[in-house]
Length: 144
Image 1 (spheres, rainbow, N blue to C red):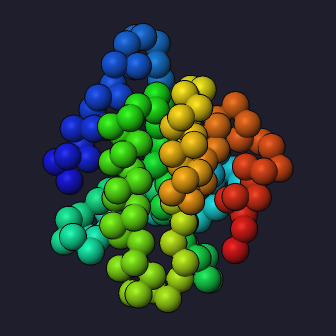
Image 2 (image 1 turned 60 degrees about the vertical axis):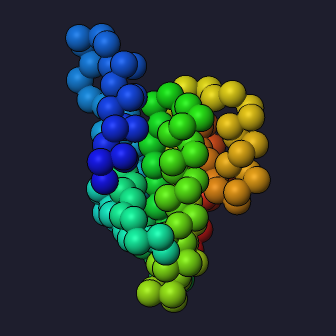
Image 3 (image 1 turned 135 degrees about the horizontal axis):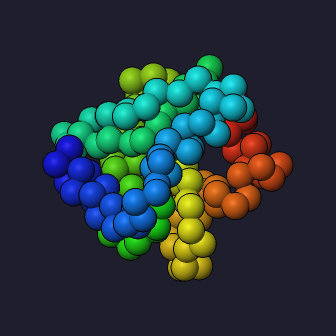
């Protein structure tokens, strides 16, 4: 939990403007709720390594779950932490719940293409914030 907190604190440099009324995660929460999604904020799960990992949100479906991490600015260390955490809890959660576990990154700023490729290589989905209202983005969130 401490490592996750440190990584999330590193994102605070993007909140330098004193006029910021909400964090990106708050915007994502409002977006998910506007789509009628039932979410669990601050989702924590223990992985195969025995470590606990926190994710910004979780959506539970009848046959699948989605863990969501928001990234105001996607960096290599935060991406690696997300991918490792999701992969570490995946097998454990699937055994516990009998549901397929998907990983989803919601990214505010346009990231380097190599980071999107890394998500693709690890079978994690992503939504670029500017494209959140596209059919592709909505289908990722509404697929059962």
